[in-house]
Every structure is written in structure tokens, then in C-alpha cells.
Image: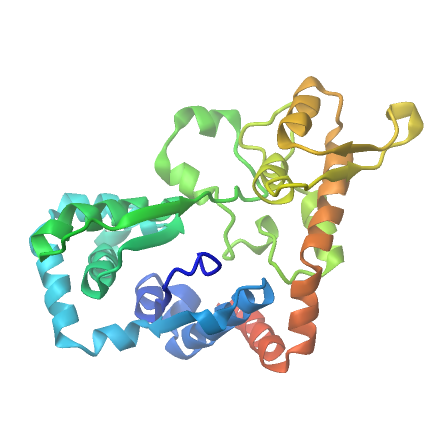
Length: 304
């Protein structure tokens, strides 16, 4: 979006994070995490000088913002609010013990309508908030409905069983996404090579199963998603020798047929990820602020 000259704003959702109990609700740590995310984007090559970072406090200091929150709440039902709580990775029942959880959908919709954003970029888990914003936009005098662009979510390395897939429960599917709260099921962009190899090696990757397979999804969404990309799989000659997959469909077909063994795919995927994230690791090693923030947040996670 930045390369396309969009006027991009990134909301550092500090108070949203407190409602969602991130880092135990400790605001100092949450603010450190917001700064860390800025470094993450920069390490990935985003020109952060062309992005406007805004903290939730910047919006919430304005009384008109809270007027928008109240008007959002006036135009939706409690049942609708509870259904939208999946945007924060929460179940409906979570509101029974912590009423603040019901504020989350209202303030997220208010963020969009108050700021007058014409485009909302987020993961597929944010679609319910974006749908609410589109539905309510005319009631707030906006001449447009915000366009929602949703990026897919990576499955956690623990994967999904066929029973879970067939059940199709949204709470189950949401919990299966890659999450920093489950570090052994997630690849962090600055993970050292040995950790990436260990995590990928232990990942769910049943033979011939391509649906809801996290290793297959990493290749579909990351490694083989770019024009001209390829994945080299090293194999012994008796198993067919090395092979270069130049498209995801080619890889998918080989794996589904059994021609590609899970272990060979895992090893190739781990090495490709290590190579893809090399610049990120180097950034966090050389940038002292980014490195210190990362180490502080690691300690905070361990103590929570």
C-alpha cells in the first residue's frame, strides 16, 4: 500500500491491547511493544517514513471520539457486539467475566469512522469489525463505505485435525492461527535459524494432506507467492534427487500424491524461511533499540 502511494496510518492500539489483556494489561510494556512493531515493519523493508503511526491515546483524547464510540454502541445490539468479539481472538463467554471486552468492537469501529478512513487493511479475523463499519458509515454522514482489504492468516504450527476442520467452529479456527501467545507454534520474524529449524521440524504436516497443513500454507502464502519464486528440495538420488518447485500448484500436486515426503518439505521450508528472514535478523542484531526492546518483551512474556 505504501508503494502504491496510499496515505497509510497505523494505529498502535494500546488501550485495545489492555482490554485484550496483552502483557497482563501493563501499559508500559504495551507501549514498548508498539515501538517494537515499528521496528518490525522497518526491518521487513517498509518505508516507515511514509507511514503515520498513531497511538490510541491520540484519538481518545478527543471527546468527539467518545461520542463516536457511544453512537456506534447505540446502533448495534449486544448480540452483534458479542459475535464481533472474535476480532480480538476472544469467545463470547469472555464478556461474562470482563465487561470491558464488549467495548472492543465498538472502539475499533469508532477508530475507522471517527478518522474517516476510506480503506481498512487487516487480517481476515478483522472482517466483522470492518463489516460493522461499512454498515454504519451512512449513519455517520460519510459519503463512502470503507473498503476492507483482508490478508489471510497463517495457521499455527500445531495445525488442525480433520475433526476440527469438519466441525468448522469459528472459535476453533481462530485459535488455530499462528499466535505470539503460543511461541512454539509460531515463527517470529527474528527467530534464529536453529529455532526455525526446530519449530518447523516439530510442526504438524501429515503425509499427502494439503488442507490446513501449516507447512503447505507457509509455502502458499510466503515462499511461493511471489513472481519468480521457487523452493528447492534436497533429496537423495534414491528418492528422486533435488527438485525445484517454481509454483505452488506444482508443490501441492507433488505433496498430495505422496511424491514429496513431509520431512523433505519441512527441511526445505525451514531453510527457505531462514533465507527470507535474514535481513530481519541482521536488523535486530545491529539496531540497539530494536534489540533491547525485543529482549525486554521476551522477559515480559516469560513472567506473564
